[in-house]
Length: 241
Image (tube, rainbow, N blue to C red):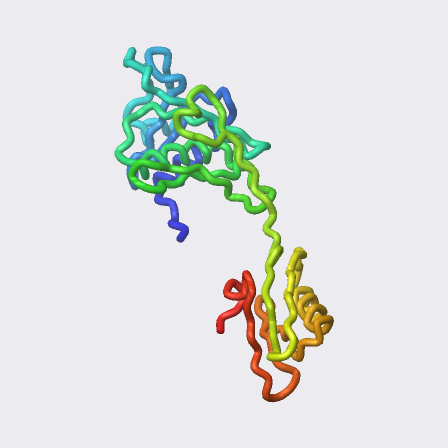
């Protein structure tokens, strides 16, 4: 289920659209439903952020920020790429829970709007980054200084699904039996029905396949009084008795 962004998240996204690229100087994130936080990069004593413009006081009670010399040794950084677009993720604050951590990562991912990736919580101790593309277009690569602390797989490449490929089942009319092998990439239900019918006819089984709709077909006897018996390795995957 897609949830609508609140006002602060929308404003943060607008800010982040201006802070793009590997040399970005600041990032924005929603603190709650109504507040947005700007953070200068890099963190620590070298971080300095000056906010200008005629409406600066309307948005920010403080318009000049200088970083403190706090310990940054626990900061973690990694990169995420979809093969074309790349962004750097900097984890430099205390996160309330795994959902908060995933949200922080998504703040950085949204900085590069063309990046096809999203972070999500799996459980209280685990998050994942997944491609928003599908099939062979789904590509993810992680890198950077601390990526091995978070990921045991650095490159993921999806594959196009082969519909009904390598499926085998048997059909009997009580006298003869056909072994049906579906080993092609069928672009439509019509092609699938034709493949089944061809093999039924070759085995002289008195059964035929009939299209029901764009996704389903059924087997029907061609002679009255015949009971169709199905079996084989993948029968239960394809048919409901």
